[in-house]
Image (cartoon, rainbow, N blue to C red; front, top):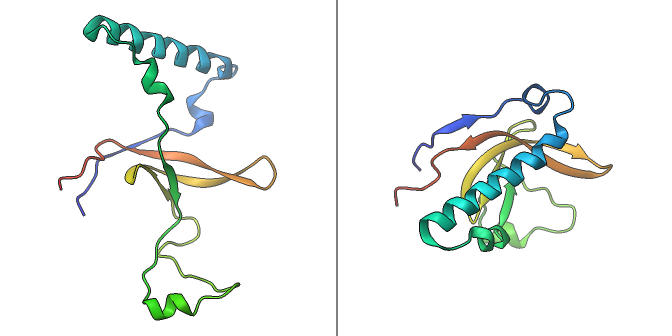
Length: 127
């Protein structure tokens, strides 16, 4: 497996000044508008179609290897030991490629989410 270059993300509270929550949507809109303008100028096509493409995003808690005989012995309540420890960052993959790492966080009662901590700059493998 090749090494990947990563970029640390600042803490959300430190990166966003007070009252900046409403500015984010304006910034996203201006970035989208700028991308559209660039695409139209360069190729005569609109990139709006790309914004509707659905991708398979997965949060990987860990992995394990087992023999088929062990797999067949699993029942309700069985525990599968993973290769990660509690508190280790989880991997975020898009279309089976590692793109980021983050920490699990609790959101809206019983739901969980991922706080991104690190973005993988070069996730294209050398295969």
